[in-house]
Length: 628
Image (tube, rainbow, N blue to C red; front, side):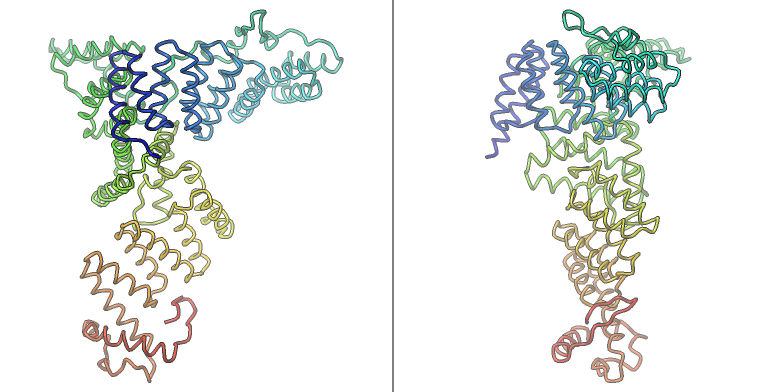
């Protein structure tokens, strides 16, 4: 049974305020009240987990973050926090397994770089993690870093030898030598394995637990060139969301301001403060950075860069109301729209207001759509996104909103999200042309957005390669994964057209149009009926249904035009000498098509009477119209 939404939101707001004031015990109490209403809410669980960490209740924090990870298994950040707590508890192998799971989640988001960092960290904490070594071998081989791949083969060989699996250990040594033929350590290990002797020492041989169970990592760090210090629990290292990218850009600009040639003493001091604040922020000194930014504000600095970074800093300290105050001042600045709306969405999500969070995530996607489409679509974008948001509000399905938020956030926080968004936009444009316009939000709110984008790309590629059957098979598979994602159905219509299966293509367009009509989206329903009529222009039933939709939408002029076309269709379909429409028509009726409108209703009735008495045979061929 759903909980009390108002009680939940009130508790989340109080919890955020308590967290901002570092009153962690009271924050725990408020988060527990929120969870009493919605026990599986990820925002409340992660907030409670942080409060437990701050009060050094690590066991409770671990259990709480595990619950959050179970509710959000595709969210790598939540799983990573489980690993970080296990690391602080000195449970090295368990932490390593958590980091491997984190890497798997990043890999599902196509973020290979971040997945690689997690596998590296797993091998540091547990050098015997074969899963991590095997994945690193694949990554390094694909990147052409064969020596690194060879070293991980040797580590795996040592692990397997300790487990008495010498045959597989020798296979790893052989593979290492194929990658790095002059690797002396690989030669020595292989020779020892072949002769049944103990393995010789070497760089990879120092990766052994000592008497206290700790890891000896010196040589490993040398050849991996990575940091081994524990990452702070709230560190966002590796994220590449719109807010993160814009933050780096704005920090660079403020740092450059320190070297401005401006000779005005007041402005020089303001630029110095901004540069100093940017440096403090980069070093993670949040409180001092906030103080310095505030000093710059007191001197009259009122730039978008200042408000944006202040907003992010207050957000990091869970002072969400102050964060929202600053971020909202930058959301209308074209240079900051994407990052500001994304950060605002994160803030509303953190305080338990998913409806408002989703609205701002949609604003991020709308801004990207606006940047990549013609200006003539601006009005259509506004209305479509507003309608889409209202659909979720009317449904009042909080779990569905949370799912959509998670889907969008995961897509936009992985590396390369900009290129993937551009690819998705190009795919949609290639599929639909100018009409109907499909927003990016309709793609990213799908439960399997990454898989959907990849599948659609494969389908379009198969179509371009003139492989219609393969494209059709891929489409059917994709629809099983995302049955309500309408662009996949439009892709099938496109394949059917290429195959000259025009009746079936028209019916597919009509089915999608009816879905849009059911959703209340008459504009796109009308566009797809027009697409169907381009294929089967003589199908009077389809045209009559279009007329009905146009009438419902109060688009009278277009309805009249379709009535004229309908009259012409009737006349052409009854062009024989004994046609029963002839008494109603002038000798050359098509010379004055508007003259037919007055009799359309009359011969429409007679047509169906005639049809019932003596059905007209089905016509087939390239025109593709159905029985009339």
